[in-house]
Image (tube, rainbow, N blue to C red; front, side):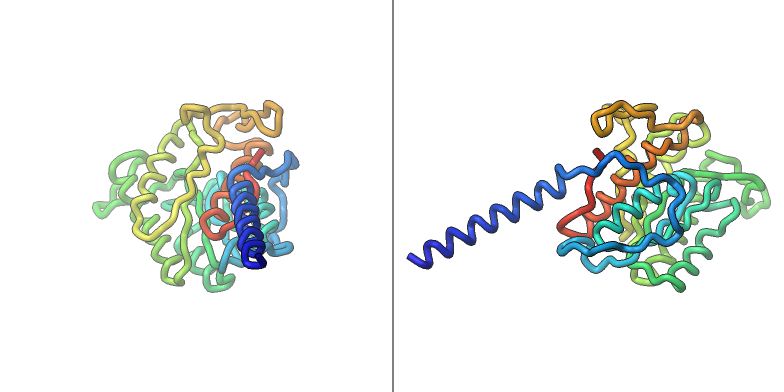
Length: 263
């Protein structure tokens, strides 16, 4: 009889545990409070929950303004499960030109901070002066040469991260209809071909029902504006939704329990 009771108790525990995991990964949602876009460069972990972010204690975020804006929401979500986040995104920067050499900068980040995971968003900023090809001619935006050069630089960035035996997660951008940033989805498709890298399709959180760009979303039982007037950047609500989705998607990949989805 004792064995029967023990077996029944074990079944109840397993069912309860499974139910909790399913709820945590699929139905648990965050609140409507916006972390904003002006948090510390280093957002420290809070209490660490069991079975979350296994082996991941430090995450580095790199990228352009589409990483900078949601980075506080990402960091807040990761802090809830015991992960410290460092924020390195620089608005207006790109993989080919701009104020940051991301291959060199990422190598420094790896050497100084020793992150367990690197998360990247690059949507295609390409300020002048343009890079030049082997003939000395400027590589024009959105040409085959541009996409080839950008992809080569993405591979070089990946090589740096993986040389430290750390996984690199590329994040999909939200839909962007405005030129020149329609290239963002094509660039992300290129990242997805990089062997041994990882991918988070979190940009869908700001898309419409057919994957299109939308200016508003239903969130936390209210209709909220999620894109700024330029239709490229995000409002605080848009940054919150995108960042919470990225944190959720990442923790779903590296642990059993996760940070909450956006409401």
